[in-house]
Structure formats: structure tokens, C-alpha cells
Length: 382
Image (cartoon, rainbow, N blue to C red; front, side):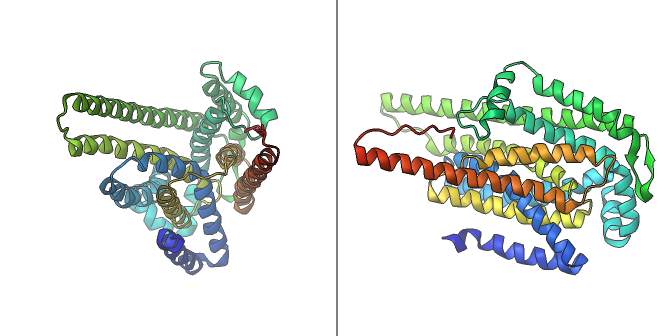
């Protein structure tokens, strides 16, 4: 079961790591490995959400999502999108950007370094909004209660996350951006560039969120209409056209999943810029990670159960928040990509072991309840 589900992911991982070594040695292998782990950790909740929706779809539409969908996810968002970001910020067409990355890496590095303040501001704002919207939401399960409980209360204030993000952008524009790091060690004033790019990141987040919400609403409408027609058919004793209804509802599910996957892809791609500016290594690492996310989705669907490690989603979002801060800081200061990658990995590992400890506590509580024939109360927020 494991090999059948993750076989392609293992094969892509082996090929990707070999390609990284051939491209730029063992350092490149380490960067690609970190990017793969980062992509899986940031998209873990995406796999869980995908599995929850995908299990409602027919086998045909599941195959469409796992074939056509993976092409869109890997070759669209993880390969094309990083190239487009570099092309826009460095003012090059996409073909020239790829050509420079492969043939003149020194000039490419210079262009990307000079464009880094804009990339960091755009990505930092996008990631910061993801983190703030998560941390201000009131949740049944909380990981770091001493932080999350008071912030959830503050989250009741409308547009608080947008206001805080804009405050952070203004502070960044008048501090780090006034001495932005450039190629050769020079520092220049990039306050206007950072401000515009940051606003663009905020707008992008709101558009992606709006599209996801739109398709989610359409999906709910389709499911509600399908349920009503089922009841009407049962009352009248006639047969309903199940194939057409399932097909239409599944089509909206497919569109919703693709928009949702694109929104989750943004954080992985933007976070990757905090680790490396090399689009070849970025494509290899994010491609490997995307394959595991798809395999994990299939595994969750086939098993029929979702993952029990409830704090992993929290850890992933804290990693997103950390990457947002790091991106803002790198506008002025250089931070080693290994350090940046390890911050996210450590937060994910911490949340994983917290989840394991929680599961053990719940199991111990149930065991005591069985021994005493009395129900045990174990807080889901432990």
C-alpha cells in the first residue's frame, strides 16, 4: 500500500536529488531536500483538505484531479510561477529568465539579488496574511494556548489582520527598505519599491482568497441542490440523472480544489525565495514536495481517515509566519538559506511531537476510563 501510493514520489525524489548534485554539488542537494520538506510541511493541511473533498468525488474525477491536477500543481505553480516572479521583478521575459538561470548564473544571481527587495516584500506580505488570518481565528484545537487564546479574541475585530500587515509593511519600508541589500554588498533606498510590491502581495492574497471562497460557495450550492433533487426523486418514485448531477458537482469540486491548491502553492513558492533564488533548485525541491502532497492526498483518501497529528497545521502556519518575518529582514540583511530552512523544519517537528504527546495523553485517559468504568475527560486543547 505504502509503496504503491508513494512509489512515484520516491522515484521523483531520487531523480531530483541526483539532478541537484549534478547541477551544483552536495550543497544543492541539501537545499533541494530542505525545499521538499518545506513544501510538504506547508502543504500538509492542503493534503488533508483535498482528501476531505476528494473522497466525495467519483473515481473518474479523482483520477482527473490526481493526473491533470498534478500537472497544474507541479508544472504550473511550482515551475512556471517562480520563473514569472523572477521575470517580472528582474524585468526580463520568462524565456530570458530561464536562459540566464541556466547559462549565465552570475548575471542571473545579480539580477535576482537586485530584485530581491520586491520579491521579499511581495512574498512576505502574502505569507504574513496567511499566518495572521490563521492565528486570529478561534479554533477548537489550540497548540500554544497562551498565544492563540488571546489572539483569537482579538481576531473578532474586523480587518485586524489587514491593518497589522499594512503596519508591518510601512515599518519595513521605512527601516529595512531604506538600506536594501544589493549585488556586490551595496545598499540603496528601495522604500517605494518595497511598498508597492508589498501592497501587490496583499492584493494577490485577497484575490486568491476571494476565488477560493467563490468556488466553495458554488460547491455548497451544488451539493444542496443535489440533495434537494434526491429528496424530490425519492418522494415521486422516479429515477434522477445521477451521472449528470455528480458530474456537475464534481466539476465544481475540481475547480475549487485547483484554486485551493494554487493558494496553498503560493506560500511554498514564496517561502522558497527565503531559502534560495535559484529557480532550478526551487523547481526541483518544490516539485518533489508537490509529488508527496499528492501521494499523501491519495493515501488519506484510500485509508478513509484523516491524520491524527492535529498540531501539524499549527506548526506549518507558524513556519509561514517565521518565513514572512525572515523575508522582510532579508531586504537589508543576508541570512543563510540553511538557517531559514531549518526554522520551518524545527517548528514542524515541534508540532509533530506535540501531537504525538497529545495522542498518548488521550489514549492514557481513555484507558483509565475503561479501567474505572467512568468516562475520562481529556481536553482537546491539551
